[in-house]
Length: 101
Image (tube, rainbow, N blue to C red; front, side, top):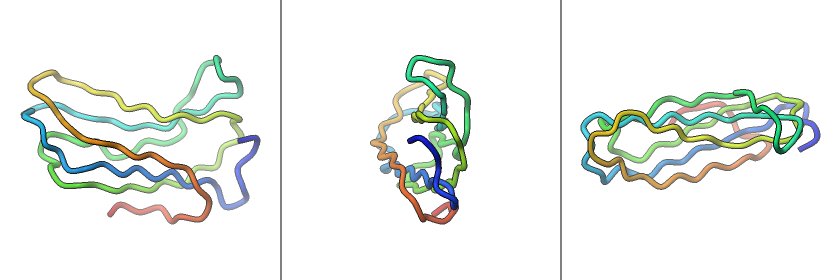
């Protein structure tokens, strides 16, 4: 992207139901932006943390207004007991509202 539209750019995260065996794993999802592909990325959006207790499917939407040319999604896993098995779909579009469903 070279510039966000006036209303911003909507980032949607969809996470499937968890089928793992963890009792303490945590997933943190962030969106980062940068002016160059290989530069230093900075966080422009953070989504609610998913823990082992969040077993159902989740959907989150965040609106971002950034002038960064490149954006990427990052999923950070912390703790190491068992497995947390989820599929993620992360997409960028114009026009979604900020909401947690």
